[in-house]
Length: 395
Image 1 (cartoon, one colour):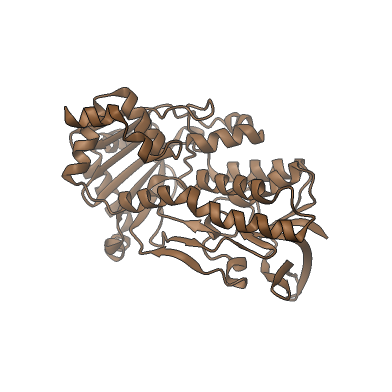
Image 2: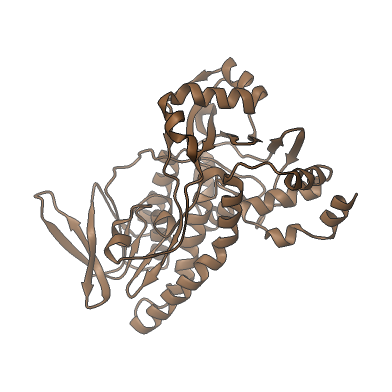
């Protein structure tokens, strides 16, 4: 019998397994994929997520891949340009954007080094129940049957379409409409910082990553998805050229080095994240539009939150259930502001009030740093609106 079974070994699952294994628990981590392997991602890890990697002992390994430290952010909307970097979070000033075939494997290897058992190419069939309590996970065997593994806590980290979430009938507690569709690919041969460009109905992001490559992502409203995917590459390039012409000119001096990837299924929701004997983390519990690049950082936060809620309670079902209830209450409390801000951003609306605020922020390096910290989840929006911003808006 395991203390914890984690289904899904990407960033949320691997980091959850790592924390429980580091605490000395017997952990099984399983994923239907084989690693290293890629997945849809914008790669960006904000400073709070970087601080967690440092605390967990994996940041140096990420740096050793050659992933560049991102210490400058450019955000251009019309004639307003913010240029700076976030306020440091727990001593971490830089962000990082490692390729997922590197990051996920680093976290898995760290979990295994801490004592977790890892099974790849291993598909979950659903939770195992004893009454209304989850007591383990059923997995598919190579002969087409299933077998069971038992655990005190079963964690679903298996994405938006989570098998565990479906099996426990985890209901949506918040569910909003799709906002944007995204297409992206990788370019080499030019220099870039972390750069964001916006105009009404359009958004471009440039994210430097491994091997001297830069991911460039183009966002359109979800209402245009059918048209955009009809000629995805032409629409992708047209968006970059008209929204970020300087970035486009730099990019085309280099070369596009991978195929175009994209999706029109960027769901926005919170699910009920826990119940007797089970919990959800990462995209299984909460997903939002990728436009604010909060997915990895927020997955790390959820792993930390779950461990802090139940990490000393696994041997006592009563205390475990109490900790799981605490987790269910804290998760939306911690993440709802970022969710609300993401929905606002993903509407792709450039309003006069927003332009007034951005213009005021652009006049002060300190206010710019606070704005980027709020976008990273390292500072609340309420804290951003301090006396200095009010004075700048009144000027």
